[in-house]
Length: 529
Figure 1: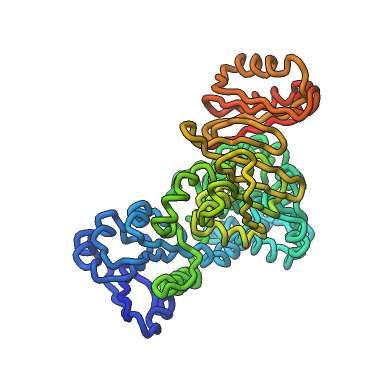
Figure 2: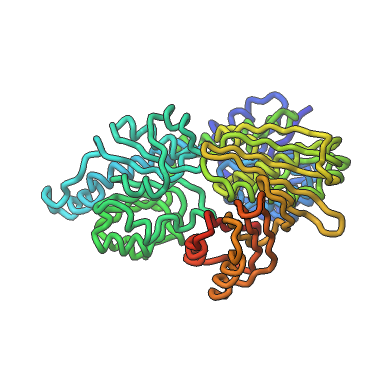
């Protein structure tokens, strides 16, 4: 059987060589097509390869009667309508690893340029000024590099820093002592990284938890004369706070490849002589552009030949009879993963998912994927999806075990998630109740009855008279409205928990005030939106 593949954006021969050489593939290149032109011809193709120029719209997908896969030679898939592709059973794949080395090398180029003030010196020399005194730099040798986010790119940056005899301290929610030892670096909390580093580089996805993760308070915790780099995503660093920190001489210099709003040609940071910047060039190398095309080409062949593939970004096809049984649990399973991820402290190491009751005879693999996605998404955001969650878990060295039991502890169905970190083990159980929907019914050893939705404040406290009233009064004084309250305790007068649903996110200072109550041991805000 011969598969027809349409390449609708410019790609090099080297990038698609695997497709060209494949004996069961016919490659057709037609670039610059309008939506109408693409609609007319797409019906005869089994696969479509694009970069960023082609917009894969619902109309195109609807007319693609034979289409099995769309490959994006790059990371972002904003130009592909994922819901439409999923609805029509079309797999969408991307190439998340192809630009890893390119971005890591660009980061290190920016690091060296920042340390030696190379762009500023070059600019002055181009203006025919020979000035050696104004550009005295600093050596990297012996300095401490703080890395916030130790995924693929952060890890490659760490390896290069070690080659320059730098000490590396890193913060990442999935960094285990074993991985840190293997890399020859030191794991630390975010505050410890900020306090110790001479240079700080960020390599996290941009999600709610990482937006402005470096802001006014964080700059105050840094050394005087620190250097800052962002070659990841605009918005991880609060640009107003960075501007102020540079003006106040807290930050000696900054290197930026990304901005919150791009293009950033008139940004105030560009007026500061301490700042060097590039126009989002992290992935702009010949090799990176070829690598993403190579990765996508190989993945497309796997999809067409019904072989295992890993970089899909939309929901995999589930047989109708399986989907009918597991679909009611989709919402519950992902929320259980998100809940336990937000509750846990430390680097995730082992995940055990136990199914019982009605789920004992069901193919629960899609539900386990949902749970893993819920856990990983809390720290990694949209980088994680239903398809690649197990693959990313393996990359992050999270061991996953799935089991079924006949004991349902009085429930018709029960999903129990146990997450072990390097600091603790947490457990959460959930069920579906007829007429009431999804419920969290147990947290660790405490029995509760909470809908896994909205904003939840989790409080661990001593079981003493008046605690509930003081918590309610404090929240009321800050105009925080409590929707529901659940209390669980192991023994009278012992440890207990409160789970409050509230109408809106709670300000950090209010959470701090709750934590200052004498009976309260821990306060955690959990968002299940």
